[in-house]
Length: 342
Image 1: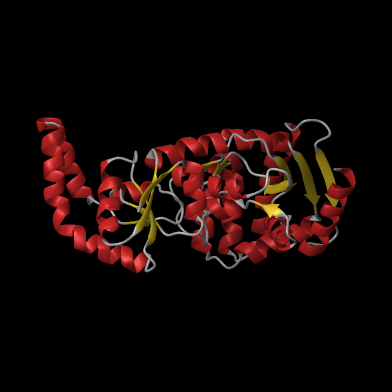
Image 2: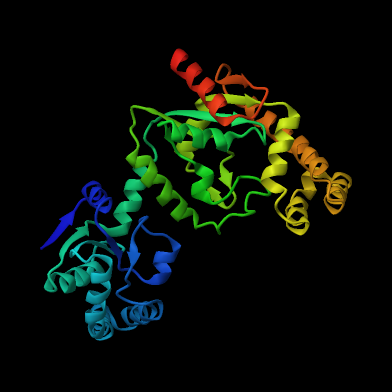
């Protein structure tokens, strides 16, 4: 059986049923519905060939050539689909829900698969994403200067059953000049939005949603403007820790990286640090004095954070002062304030 599903029903099916993206590998690698497997009807070179035929000879010639290229691969498609979904329940989509997904659905249906097709294809998913990410949510922000343990608090909130979106985790970046260290390569911005919207969609709009304070760009990824605007207007818990505690945290987080990695990333701040301070920072690294280097980096990032906080609406920044970086205790006190004043 082949069923055409609108986007919301399709995404519910995606939660429990394997999904095939039958676009070319190049299209898939750029961005896709999270969790989908790529089983391209055409490979990258074949897609170029069909495009050239369509341009030079028209649609009918392109369709005929497409079947010539794809036909010999029908048995391979079935074998691959069986590996992905042995129970023969599967979702399929292409760019617009047209010929490519319909051909794959037909082939798999003849092999006994129950196939769900996405009406409008990946384009419909992207349109839905833009609408979904514009929805109003009860966002609250964990802020604080660099080294305050914001990410630890976000993850502690998750452990305690709160709704959380860890933007830095989705972006594979910690959001500073050193944010790529120890992280996987960043995905395209389109894929970042796709990953984000899937988490956004599955969370309740009636409960508090916790996020970490971020600038709009996290490495090469950009937080969608509707969400960023909500974050800027949200109640922000300004976690405050003694400088020594923050230095300890930075040394623990970044002291494991070698001098060359830290130096190369420090050089990215040359324009903002100035030549003299940059040279001092590099000398600290060459001497193995990570604490002095961390202190200098915190001086720079503290100024950036204070400036960002100054742009928030009056009354939205809540100071939360702590003596020690103890994520569980800090999180408990933040939740106590939130429940008392919400």
